[in-house]
Length: 77
Image 1 (cartoon, helix red, strand yellow):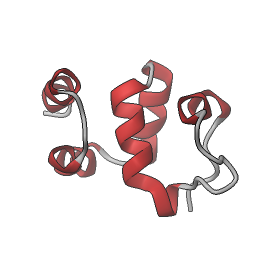
Image 2 (tube, one colour):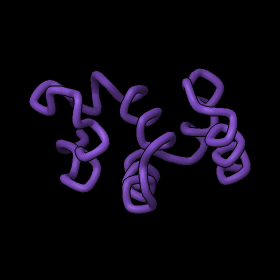
Image 3 (tube, helix red, strand yellow):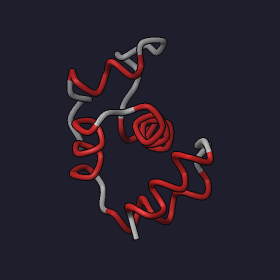
Image 4 (cartoon, one colour):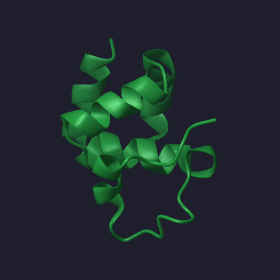
């Protein structure tokens, strides 16, 4: 089970109810937000939380800007 989001990650979810946001139910949304807006620390947390191959498979289904999608496609290769 994944613990609650670390404080340094929650800053990207300022418009969300953090009491209801959890990894089990909102994994895609959390992943998408971190890959699009997150800093290095948040991205490192995400990479420790899930594996690279799972992220790579998920990329096409995420709503990312072309720039972010291209970066992560290259990074995760």
